[in-house]
Image 1: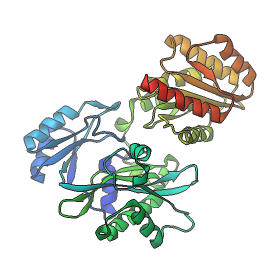
Image 2 (image 1 turned 180 degrees about the vertical axis):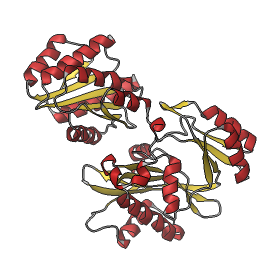
Image 3 (image 1 turned 60 degrees about the horizontal axis):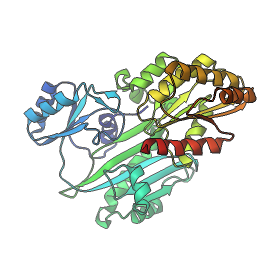
Image 4 (image 1 turned 90 degrees about the vertical axis):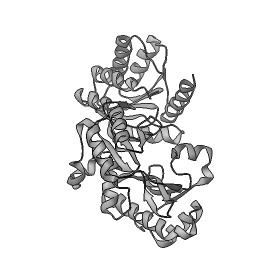
Length: 385
């Protein structure tokens, strides 16, 4: 479950971290009234559970309550990165001197949490990691040891945090670490963590992702879930009985069994790619289930390539191949390249079906690593084409 910015900031505020004053509203009139109560320049921000809202035109500044109403009118009802906007956050605008990045997430490769700090805040951290990796400090923390003072000193020193703010930075790091454990989170992020013109540190944005399997322990957070906030593809998949979660990458992932799908996500990331989704067709999936999955995943405009990874146990690989071919025939072809890795029950028959069909854009891979690598390469070439 991904919390919106306003929901994440409510968690930060309750934990004692400073965030700008603001109100969540769902009409231009309410936005105008909220801006009038704040009595200052405001930022009007769409509340959807995904990053990149600024680049997508989902954040507007307003100097007057009337401009705030105008901004809300433009944003409410719009679609931002596939999400229909139902609410906006009207928030006091801050005068920013510097921006930083701070997060705690799960490093699946090392199987432990990692703290990430950078002086290049306000930017896509993946872009920073690719272009200027020296500006990012990472600290892997053994959960059995926990976060210690020497960890904090190392992280902030390596990340280049100003010495005069080290005590305040340490407070933010400790709090994010505590929230990460308390809420069974997969990600707790502040970007940007801003130093304002008067020298204070403020969480200008926030993102929290909770492990769905742990939501039963967090009824307060589970109650925040809104069907309206779901991505349209998530609703479409749910209506078709598919377990689908929208992610922020460009490689569509389809697999059978949650463990295999998670392992596929990890393999794609190890090859330098970014998964666009999680989709589990389940055990024993028939051709029609595979066909439904192939209708959902390439329907995501972010997807530049699809990786279909199936282990044939109860699920038969020839059924999967048949479903794939049915979907492609019904759709009149495939708009993006599809890499298929079949292993297990009737894998030879499945590969034979794909080979005989000779569908353009569909290729088979013999191994897990080869499939992930090829999907990443195809996504890059397709995205640049």
